Image (tube, rainbow, N blue to C red; front, top):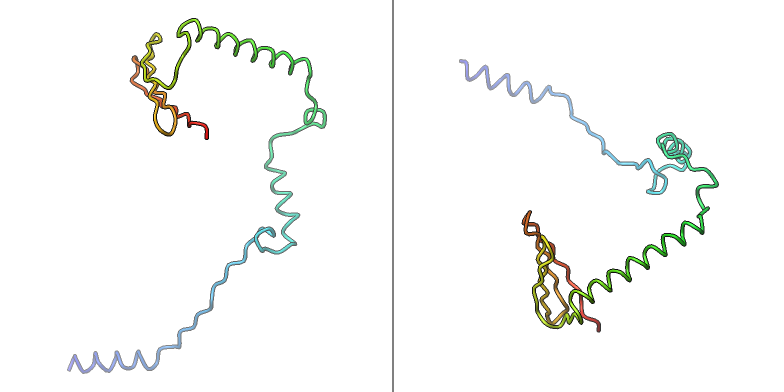
Length: 139
């Protein structure tokens, strides 16, 4: 008796059930640059300007001090010349086409030439960190 009642209840639920409906979901972007409504432009711009914490003044944008530029350029040139002289004094004519290993304080520098260029491996003896710089050969 119970199976018959259960079957009748299931049949009644199927017959009397309301029809299910659904609608298609579509995505509409907000930003007008990506296809959104052009009316959103002013709202998006105002929102971005309110979040911007950096305030530029007109004088800061394009003014550069020529004297400071000259000073930094002079410092770069002097340091570059000093580094060239130090390398020349320490290693003489450094030939990067020949393999070699150099010890510089806490660092060990290994130069390995290859078919596609020169690989320079810098190894920190204290921390164990290793950096490899690949210099491609000119074509």
